[in-house]
Length: 115
Figure 1: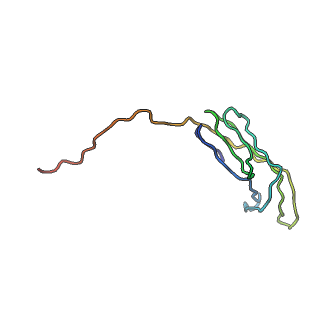
Figure 2: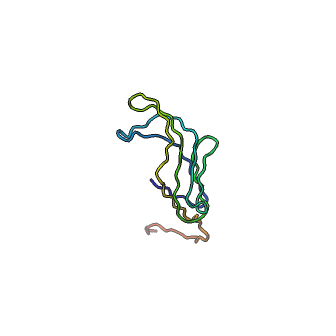
Figure 3: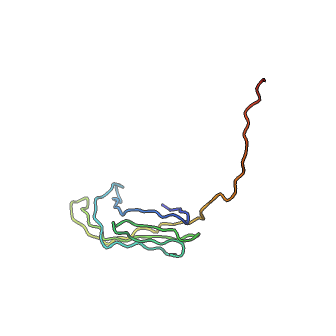
């Protein structure tokens, strides 16, 4: 997984759990959440009031973001679990906003027809 944003954008994500064996989604609740960027001059990572992970572009460049949360869930044996987990690093690329500064007016003609 990687992210690519323009300097005027942000992206919002949510924590989730996936079973390592079956790849099935695991229902969980998350507390003690944090998100970090290894280069906040390029993009910041934070947790909003709703527990979402927010990556906000700052300047053109690259960085990695990651998150951490205390996950409470029931494992495949039915046992309650509570673990502080950290995501893998997610590469982020921030590109410049592309704007059209100049335009040309054109006329497009169809095929010739008899008069």
